[in-house]
Length: 144
Ligand SMILES: [Zn+2]
Image 1 (spheres, rainbow, N blue to C red):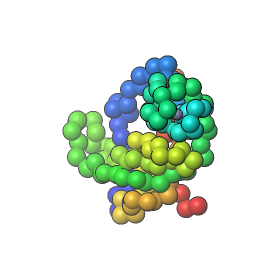
Image 2 (cartoon, rainbow, N blue to C red):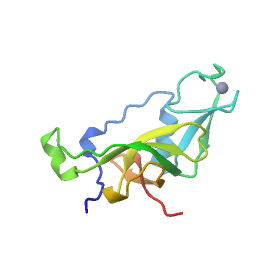
Image 3 (cartoon, protein in one colour):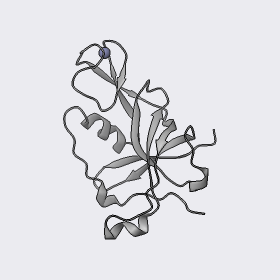
Image 4 (cartoon, helix red, strand yellow):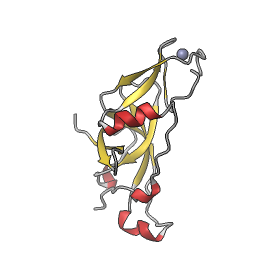
């Protein structure tokens, strides 16, 4: 049975700006946060400068439970770069975040047998520590 692995770290390059830096600063502390508009309460991801609902620029960073649900996914089984072979298969996924309103995060589902993958599957954040205080959220099955 094939287990979902992690994509090659070379595919990840962190680039932050004033709006996204708080997300990645929290991630470095293994805390999953979402931008919540203080004007209307809507959560948004990515944390754009203006709320698409009420145009407010004021946000709070709300800490989430780290639980979520698989909204959509795909399985990458072919290497498009030579160094990818040992990282296959991996599973890019769209995750609905508990407490995050309509926010969904693009990430990966890891440490799951491919046969068990399903839309609606309950998952929990796990953190992959990269160099120099950079941590990347992935999601693993959660039995509840
Ligand atoms: Zn708003």
